[in-house]
Structures are given as C-alpha cells and as structure tokens.
Amino acid sequence: RKEVEQDPGPFNVPEGATVAFNCTYSNSASQSFFWYRQDCRKEPKLLMSVYSSGNEDGRFTAQLNRASQYISLLIRDSKLSDSATYLCVVSSGGGADGLTFGKGTHLIIQP
Amino acid sequence: DAMVIQNPRYQVTQFGKPVTLSCSQTLNHNVMYWYQQKSSQAPKLLFHYYDKDFNNEADTPDNFQSRRPNTSFCFLDIRSPGLGDAAMYLCATSRVGTSGRVADTQYFGPGTRLTVL
Image 1 (cartoon, chains in turn orange, green):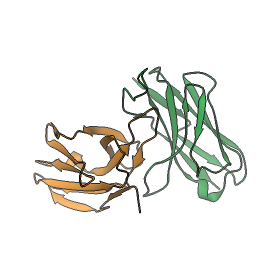
Image 2 (cartoon, each protein chain N blue to C red):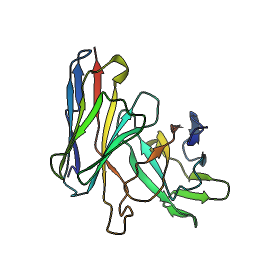
Image 3 (cartoon, rainbow over the protein chains, first blue to last red):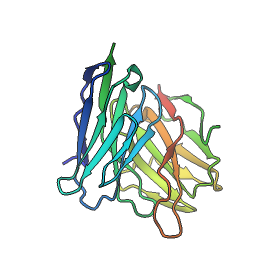
C-alpha cells in the first residue's frame, strides 16, 4: 500500500472554475501535512500547511480529516498560472524526519 | 535571495564515473536532506544530516554517499552512476528546535538534473 496516494490526473479545468484534489495517507502517526506545488522541471515549493481546523490562503483552502486519513485542496477561481503538479506531503512531524510525497496531481487550467 | 543553492544545475556523467553534487544554504538550518526524483515520480528521501549525524534511509543504495563538512554545505556522492540513477536530485533544509520538533517546513533548492550516458 502506497504511503501517500493521489489521483495523478491530469485535471483539465477551464479558467475561473473551482477544482478540488484529495489525497490519502497510510501512516496514522503522521503529524504534519502540506501541499506543495511543483512546476515542470522545477523544485517543489510549499503552497500551504494543512491543519485539522482547516485553513485558507486566498483562493486556496486545505482540509485535513484525521479519522479518514485524507487531505484535500480546493482552488477557487482558477488562474492559468495555477497549472502545475500539486504534491500531497506528510511527515511524522518529529525530529528531522524527511517528508513523504505523493506522486502529485497534474492540473491544467485552460483559457 | 537564494537560500538553498545547488550546483551544478545540470550534470552529465558517464556510466560508472563518480560524480559529486553540491548543496549550500544560507538559512543556518541544522538539517539537510537529499531527495531523488525520477520523471513523473514523487521525490524520494535518500538520507539526511541532523547537525553532524548522518541518517540513511533503509532502501538507499550503497552507491549513494553524503558528506557535510560544515553547517552550510552538504554533498551527494554517487560512486558508480548507473543509467537508473538519472534523475533530479533535490537538496532541502529545515530547522529542528530544542524541543525536537521541526520549527520550519523544508526549503528546497532548485535541484541538479543528472544525466548518465
């Protein structure tokens, strides 16, 4: 069983639409959760951390459901510049543990 | 201002010829990581240094080694690159506080894309 699973897509979405991604994680001891964005041939960049209470940053909203072990990302009013791969990431949150990445969901915003 | 710097950005080596990738950071973070990312795959942690302590992932091949001569620099050595080692190699840093918990998330460098001929 994969540790972090995501639908790879691609999601083809018209500009201005709302799009949602989910991911599931297998390690119930995971403590920290993130969404990273990765553009083609570039490094991953932190989009936002994910908290149990849910959090919002402009057009982006992230939710965590610990009971079901899934994480979601909602993008409202999508822009062409949102086209990228979105990586769901978890870590145990303690010490210097590395991050466990999902394979990513590829999003294409169409004009 | 660049915070995590990787050199070179592109590296071409021959099958079996040792290669060293470099990472430096200006964040004064105490943890440095090396990830391998192959095409269309997730980044995979190879190992990390927590201060001077080296922590190897169980499934990292012996062909991969690392050195951290000081806080700012960390090197990835591939002793005998094979065709399957062609990938993007990402360096990342984070800061672990006295509580033992990560104070910051991980910051990634731009990566070194390795080609093996």
